[in-house]
Length: 404
Image (tube, rainbow, N blue to C red; front, side):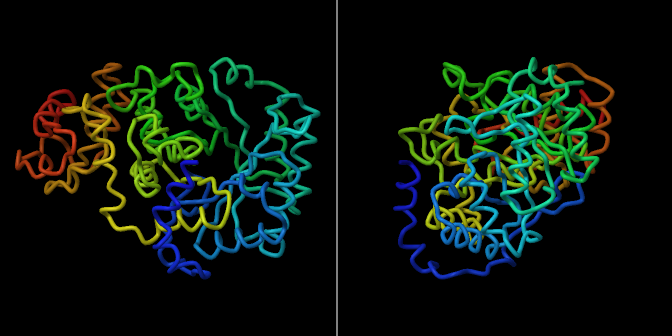
């Protein structure tokens, strides 16, 4: 497995930290959109709890909480998974913010998605009961991966039930999970979705907007840079303060951690994948799937990682030769001596050139603290750009397009 190969590479380092750690001061926290919640920038998924007993689940939760993690995603309807997490949270429910999924049930010995109202109600009540709580903080509408599915939700009994749960206080905030950038953007613009769980990593960012990672041939014709629909989604969420929680940080099943399975043909480290996601200002937390304590220890090296360990540009370079000269918004060009947010300017410029200028786009540009016209062509940004972007030329173009 790719995770095992990663563990081997970190084995010597982890032996020195095998005892219980308390690096809370190293954990950074971010706002979860406009919810008022502050969440750890890395958080834990639920998958590993299925493989553990009660004692093992408590130990895994101990390590997560001791590290400063305060957010967990629970998508799995497996009764064992839910019960183990409930046991691990007993007496300390207030220490963990729960993102639980609505529309997940356990049937025929497996996890299933449903929109049937009776099944949905049964599945959600089971979640609360097994967790030993009367509410969860984020009620996540489980997996909506096509515009048709999103449109079918509107005005449905299923959605009425979600709103009812919020009115009753059983969920505090409404979210949705999706692997489709077009759907994620539709949800962001709905006006009532507060948190979006989205699949994000260096490989998925180059998928075409309406493509999901599981489509046949999805990675056959990748975009040269970040897909414009994804750019708009990230920008919209950042501008409107919608929380985005990341799934598939390592490519799904850890594929990006091994060159043999990486969709980009090159291996990334966990630190590089996490840094890539967190570089986007809209991201609240990266949810990391772990099967055991060793995997969690590996991922927690993030808290001690150096800037060099987090630098993902070298890993991307072999697989992105066609992106030479094209900005990927990685922020390696920063800081600009004039304070220009170069990556953000380039994002807005690309959006204007791709879809045309709009008053909203102009307003976003106008709100930036510094503008492209302030560029002095000093060239310091170009010494740090891993993709050969002619930044001064881009700034000149942006100044003409946006008028300053």
